[in-house]
Structure formats: structure tokens, C-alpha cells
Figure 1 (cartoon, helix red, strand yellow):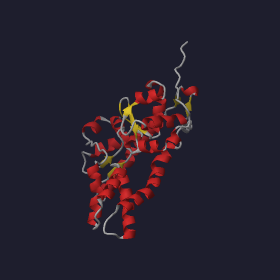
Figure 2 (tube, rainbow, N blue to C red):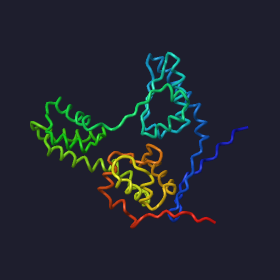
Figure 3 (cartoon, helix red, strand yellow):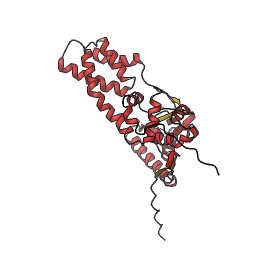
Figure 4 (cartoon, rainbow, N blue to C red):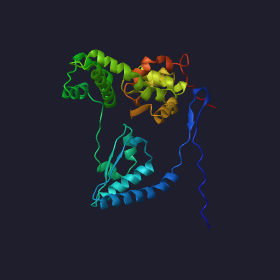
Length: 298
């Protein structure tokens, strides 16, 4: 008797309730992903055997590990762990945002006790300055102090921003071929790269948000950089923090904010608070406060 095909999975919509009460979301079924796990382990083992036969080692790297599905991550972790006691060890490295620790906790005990963990943060101003100045000096181009200070401030310790602004400044110098990298060239590089980075990082993330989500981001940004108490943001929206859990959850799922610790939230993207403050008109679509009404009893 032939096996019946699995029924198609239903879409997983979210429904925002009226009057700002909250939102209903459906969780994806996990049975299908669990069934795929053994085949993933088998494929990884076969691949590793082929690599070992060629006299090499298999290296697996995963970025944005916090977005990985748990069954697949468990299969990967189990395969890596099993290879540790063989002559064909698999080397595994992953990176992710602070909430990646939650994904790691879903793995078996060996991931918590035998894997090395490193907490990385943004570069300090001194490290950022070195990252900009040293490559220029190795190319025989001194950087004027004012130009360096401006590039350091705009990069804000974020390596990708450092790379893009420095690269643009290098091209501006190369066009002029002066004795130093000047403040005007740094300003020109920032003016050229800034709009592109805004579109790439911020506009794509903030434009699809609902009015309620944009107001949440507005209140969070007005509190400055770093993490802030969810209760303070909720109070500014005219509600208790317990009443905006769906709003917070939606922004977490969309990758707009992080929750570095219990009861605290921060923007996921570097300098996002500055971007929001500079574009407040885009985050104030609804006049007045957002009131999230308490449900009536009885």
C-alpha cells in the first residue's frame, strides 16, 4: 500500500486585533523539520567522508545562527560532536546576535560545555581609529586628525561601516592624489556612502513596519543608544509592558530589535536610534499617543 502524501502546510499569518489590543500569531509546525533531521546528518557524514578521503578537513561556518531552525541545528551539532572522536574531525564555527545564546541552549549538553564561546562587541574608538589609520599609512597616506575623527564618529565601531567609509575615502584621495587624506575627502566619502547605507540597513527594515511598530521604534530611539527598559517604552505608548508583548515580539521576529536581557530592548542595527531621530517624521504617522486598551472583564 502506497504511503499517503503529507498534507500541505497551511500558511502562518498573524492577525492584529482592533483597538490596539494585540496580535495573534501562529507557530510553524516542527514535525516536518524533525523528520528531515536524519537525512541532514547522513548527508553531512557522507560529505565528511568524501572530504577525509581527499586528505582534507571539512569546515562548516554559519552566520546569523540565531535564525537557524532547531532540528537542523541539532543535527549539525550532533554530527560535529560525533566526528570529534574520529580522525576526520569536522571544524564548526558560528556567529550571531546576542539572542544566538538562546539557539545554542536548544542543543545538547556538549554544545554548552565543550564548545568555546566568545562575546564580541563593537570596536572601541581607539580600535576604530587604528582600523582606518594603519591601512592608509601603510599606503603612504597620512590621515589628517580631523578627517580621522570624523570617520571614527561615523563608523561608530561597526566594522562594516568602517570598511565602507574608509574605502570611499580612499577612492576620493586617489582621485586627488594629495599628500594626506583631508577632512573634505572624509566628508565627501560620508556624504556619498551615507545614503546608500541608510537605504541598505535602515529603510529596508523600517519601511514595512506598521504605524504601531514605528511608534515603538520612535520612543525607543528617543531614549538614546543602547538597551532600555521595555516598561519605559511602554509607558511612553500609554500602556503597561505586559500589554505590548505582541508588538515587541513582532519587532524581534522582523530583526528590528534585540532583547539583550529580561525586560530590556535595543535596536539590532548599529546607529539605528540616530537614524530614527533624524527621520522622526517617518515614525509619527499617528497623531497623539498610542493607547493599548485593557480588555474588559465580565
